[in-house]
Image (cartoon, rainbow, N blue to C red):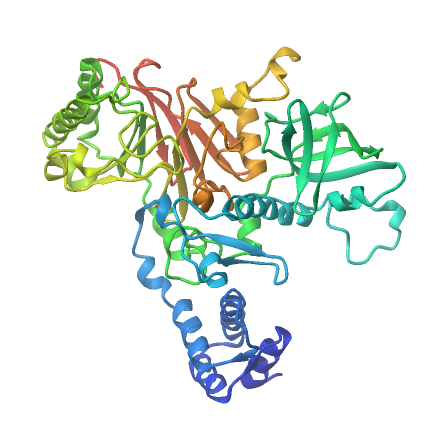
Length: 527
């Protein structure tokens, strides 16, 4: 049996690293009290942490090992944080390193800081990063990952993904080609497929569309044949999805919300135990809470009175918070409406004590222009609300809510109508029964993005595009939309729309984390 020293040296050598003597001694001292299986598990975790740092030298100093070891055992402090809200501008940006086949933090690879309005190459970096994330996921899928050993290649059920440069370099007709690329329209009425290696014109006349809403900027899987510098697509679909469990089994450190431990909070056994034990936890989601409408305020009073006997973990109020966009003097109306809401909430001390109040801005709420991610509502528009409700959290759109091991994304955008308007294929004109929310969910999951639309339709800050990423898939995605309420589960991820409160007969949604269930609710005259 190997000694502990030999096991450490062997493991580091396998990854191309050499430990300095003081670093080796430190590791031996820290691990010698553990059982052999625990020792090996800790060595593997420390190595994962070191590999993710993008070190320039294979010689490992003691300070590097100490940092990795502290990170390994820092989860205890973070495991006491059961509930946390992260705005889009505090999320960690990861980028896929093809050489190491690892996701690394943007800050470890670049000296420059993130700029709100980006640089000349920021737009290209954004699109390349979106593509690389989906490509590495697709290439690992059983349909495209060739077996390491195959006794009969003719019986193989895998397919080959072709880069666009492969097509461009072909002088003869290529049959049965499968390409992963971004669908674009570089010239009026002419569509193209792009990837980091090149761009090719496509012919869509014979294309059969499957499984989603196809718009420009979608990352699609296209099958067809290449001839005379044109790729004739016969079938178009989306890359296969991947559950969060599979993603985290490959990249356990891939956690976009700030978390001190080495691995994602979603893998914490302590947080999982707390989550399952708290069966009474519930999160209440309401969208289009028009505070300038008397009937809405009356319904909110009924809601608070009903929940005062059993306070939920949090209320998530999603904009817009006025029935009409703010123009000039209406900023005072906005302030007065929040002042009235603060006075109403303060009537219920049990809610003030036991519940969090989270506010996510809508497209017409005050703040920066219609570019995502959108910062929180400025304090100058809130008057004395924060004094009346000190526990209120005003966050960005979108935002992440961490409840124990679960990651909940809250997003406000009329996304379904935009997807339908910009779709190059309209399934509702060709099929009898079309489930639009289900098609949208499949599109978003396949693209790993909340907003798979052209930038002229849905502009984003290029260097904060990662805030709209859905990789790894969250446990819950709340897509607040003026579209009808829906709940769709796909790839172990729950998507739901609470519906527009005034437009949907005062309906809202309640999420129960311990059971991972969504309940349809409605504010009646007597709640």
